[in-house]
Amino acid sequence: MRPFRILGLLAATLATGSAPTVRPTPAFHVDTSWPGPLPDKWLLGDVGGASVDSDDHIWVLHRPRTIRPVDVLAGASPPGAKCCVAAPSVIEFDTSGRVLRSWTTPQQSPDWFESEHGIFVDGDRNVWIVGAGAHDGQLLKFTMDGKLLLRIGRKGSLAAANDPTMLGLPTDIYVDTRRREVFVSDGYRNHRLIVFDADSGAFRRQWTAFGKPVDPAYFSNPGTPEMSQQGHIPDKFTTVHCVTMIGAELYVCDRANDRIQVFTPEGKYLRQISFNEGVAGQIGSAWDAAPVPGHPDRILILDGTNSEIAILDTHSGKVIASYLSKGRYAGQMNWPHHITVDREGRLYVAEVGGAARIQRFVPAPGLIH
Image 1 (cartoon, rainbow, N blue to C red):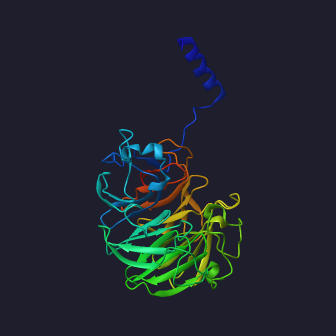
Image 2: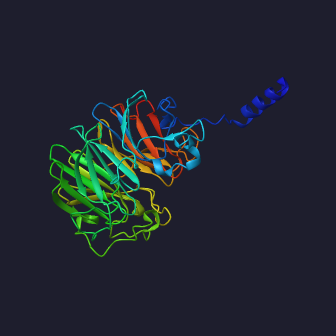
Image 3: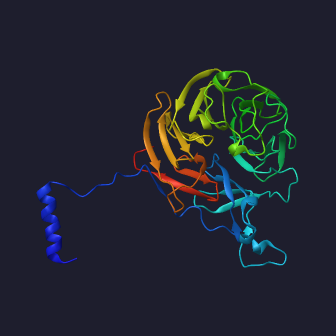
């Protein structure tokens, strides 16, 4: 640009009193160094869930069968390309992004899930997994090395929506090790929150929206879970998509109703937090939630439709901070599905819908700690 042109622009700015636009500091920024390169020519499919354990290791659950065959030709016999092969379904990373261990693929386990959905590592170092495929009605508990410890429910033809012996396309898990209870958001079909003994698997209790009993007649076609709902149904749960605890309160995502309902662990309804109301039809805004380290009065909300992460006050629902960036590049999100957070306040966002990745986001200084 010519010098007189620069001076002319400066003079015009001074004359009008305007100033260059200053962009606000984003609430989070992506850490492109995490994770590191995957070993052994591995490739991820859609990442259904993630969980952070007591060592701040990140556990990832992905869907190998969502990978296009043309992308995993190195796993063919004979190999049809130099790269790639489907990674194992469960992968543990350390905070630097290095793979520590991995296990289980659908081919190795005939009773594995049709569509991997949620994972949770409890305080006793057990790994809990659910799937939400058309015949997925079970919750599995493993050691960290992949040894099966407990099966709750079963895979196969689904039972009545209030049946305590079988789940119905469950989505998420939270384990309260003090109470020895496991809470399951169940899910795309049964529209309930159900609780089991974390050691024996015995049924404890169940409820639906506003703490009401489960209606056995209220369920949808399990063959197409993403499109089986009827949109907003304020007096009922729609897709029960997440469950987490903050202190002594249980938070349950009611996805298509754009809200989180809060309960006591016994199932008493306390209040409701609405977020991004008016998202079209079945998709909804309340996809996942997680505690904010060091802030028991705040909660992280993930809106998979708008590709937005927000921090809300747990009582008023006021938005304290928000990060919205939809797209396929680093730092953007495309169908973000689950969110988890480590002790440093770093977020790990699992993406589906063909995005097939997990990203780490770092909070702006002072936002969390």
